[in-house]
Image (cartoon, rainbow, N blue to C red):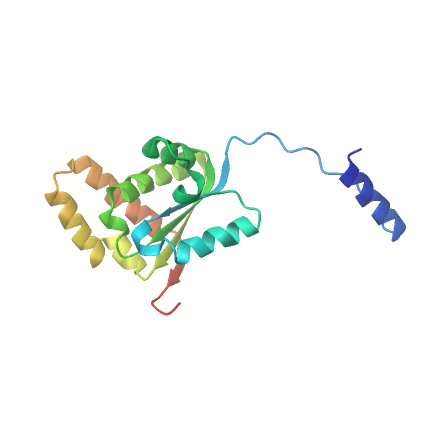
Length: 180
């Protein structure tokens, strides 16, 4: 019997509780991360996302956050896409400039595909943006898509970005305004 399980059993016996058996070992996980954080760095790095990362790590949750998890020399795109595939939960932090980034939008498409095909969970957080603006691509999100369409991106790629935004905005999430 493992030392921790043995001491737990002895402790339970000494206070009159019935003996407990340790839980069976968990099967090996195919995922590597509990949570993947998707965000636009210039909007929230050093602010909300760093606090969220620290809090999750404090709860012993294995989190992928690019600047905290990747090493020098890692191929960025490959590392991020692999981390998405190996994560169970995705926290997508929408901010005012999230849709300006093709990286963020490509991540989001991959996230939504994994959520649909593998049953992973996407959890949106709307930070100083409205879920309606994200879903309808209005306001700052409309401006971003006008620029993407002018930027020469393939029509199919832009359509996939739009569909992913609509899909994730339809999931109940959290909204944080200017003073929250």
